Length: 382
Image (cartoon, rainbow, N blue to C red; front, side, top):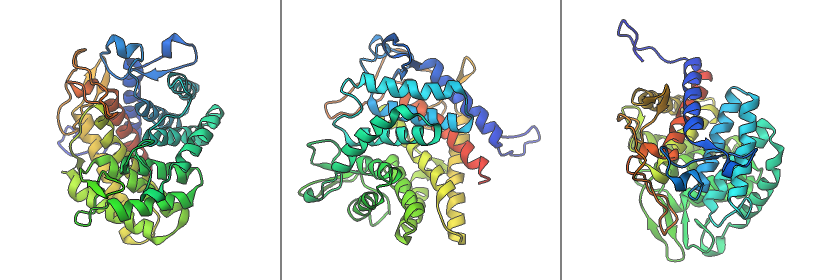
């Protein structure tokens, strides 16, 4: 931000907290409602303005809801209130009930994201009712490991595709549930199998058997691997994890950041990609071990990308009734969406972008993640 004298002023932790509050308020007012009017439940409506199908939760997107829980935990950890704590429990109940079959599904990436958010809810906010869900998810994720096929975790049950979007969050979930040996196996598999030797970035995935690699490079793949290596660096102390985190952070800065800001962005499932990268950049900034200059520089580098991206997103937001609406590309002005042009579920299981991506809950969740992450690194003095 710029003062009246034209000098740049770095936002304080208090200002980022205020912006995070507004991001939370925008999502709660536009997207969060009770599931089928059932008391004590909540879910995020996946579009705003919403279609009738979306308002009735015929479309609901399991993994988006997991990230909504994660953001709700962020807010409760930053500034605890009874309302925020109740919201976490209501969202968890909403997910379990809307999923019909309980906590689990066929997709290992979906289940990993929910495990991560429920583990944080229990550990940091004492939400005990999620314990059964965590046990069920932990069993599914641990047993999904498939070295006999050359993996790795498959993307979903019965699939031949073993990818970073599944293995990364599964590894993080395993580390946080105390299964460090399995988390290390996953991290080693990712580094050996999907790291591009030229750029240092992480490819999307590999088909097994056969070994055909899908080479698109997505921001969230980098984020989950960075987060996994940082978790393992903290909990195991083994040097290879710090070395990999440092190397990947350099690759992210070189290939995915322009002018200090994470580039690109879309809607649908892609609306969450940059927000996931930001979350784990912030985690690296706060948690990466090491006392040498290279470690301190890495922590500050990660924090700077978070702050610069958050500043850009805030400057390019729209305000709707006093609450922010974020764009999918944080370097471009956000646009006001209409009710038409909703995204849809593809045959492959992914969700396409709405005609105007700003209407997608995923895009707004990334904006909320960004404000919370900027507060976190600024409050830590980074």
